[in-house]
Amino acid sequence: MFTKSMTVAGVLAAALLSSPPALAQISDDVVKIGVLTDMNGPASTPTGQGSVTAAQMAVDDFGGKVLGKPISVIVGDHQDKPDIGAGIARRWYDTEQVDLIVDVPVSAVGLAVQNIANEKKRMFIAHSTGTADFHGKFCSPYAIQWVFDTRALAVGTAQEVVKRGGDSWFFITDDYAFGHSLEKDASAVIVKNGGKVLGSVRPPFATPDLSSFILQAQASKAKVIGIAGGPPNNGNEIKTAGEFGVLKGGQQMAGLLVLITDIHALGLPVAQGLLLTTSFYWDMDQKTRDWSIRYFSKMNRMPTMWQAGVYSSVMHYLNAVKESGTDEPLKVAAKMREKPIEDFFARNGRLREDNLMVHDLMLVQVKKPEESKYPWDYYTVLAKISGEDAFGPPDPACPLVKK
Image 1 (cartoon, rainbow, N blue to C red):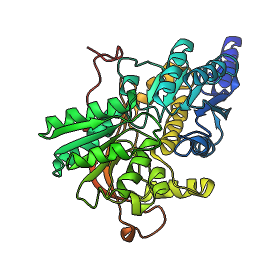
Image 2: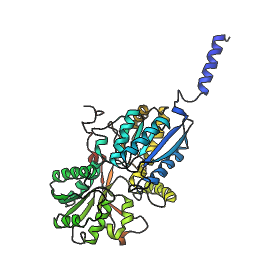
Image 3: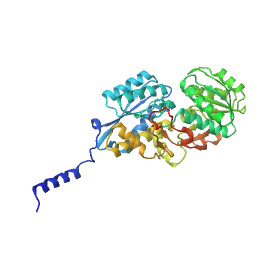
Image 4: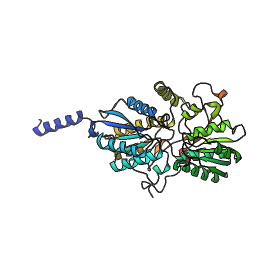
């Protein structure tokens, strides 16, 4: 015989069974992702609209909703200026209820946005911010670094090149913090592995005529000329070195930050023989090809490691929101750290306690024109570099690291 209390209990049980997953909580009933990037400046080709497209692809592939709530993507152009980037981030977090900011090329802008993310206690995943300080002395529970840092690229390239006999180096270093960091990290690895650094020159950012710097590097007789900097200097240095016959003279060039779009712009006749380290190559295997061909159909060019990383991180973030039942930043970040990251972008990936995503890299060499069999067939993979070797241990300066 049923009592009244048993009937009430049965109704409550039925209601609970028919309700959504326990206490699923999405702030403002939408998950909003802001792609903060360079839409028209020097970083717009390797980031820019391509990063926006990658983020939207991840949202579409996820199904456009998470925990029954819509996912939206908005775009901002920081114009490579820290004050503008910080201002957009503040507005997005404060008034537009953005849950996650992604991309953010240029380290100075990335660090400025990181400060705002800390202040507002909202999430930020950097893809094209390279300074190792991001997960070192400035590390944050709200800010994640997904694709690379200066140490990984410098260590990956320098260590593998020295192993192959490139034991004397001369650096052409962009005269700002990012370039100095690349040179410092690479030099330490070169010396540790028995090599020598013969000297360096430091052209200012966006130097129009790099001839004198290339001539000094050539005159050093170093086996390897290390290019410690990003666009536009790096591309112009490779081009000028080609005009001066540096590679034909027997010296090698190693780019500490070179992207596939840089190679495409230069062309194989100019860039052939260049050594570089990358987190991603579209033609590495079937998984990378399948995704990249889809991306190519939308952008008419192959993705950089930064753009591929945007997709990877957005997908991992959305899965973490789904599994944790909330978009509360610290709970989502904790969930992101629980599972390994093994997708078309990352091999042996994991999100570490300092919020650096550690994953394998590869040393590649740019092909000669006659070696390339089809469009964007630019790299020969020379070596795989484990994430542990490339990124090294967590920086004790990061307060998130257990002492």
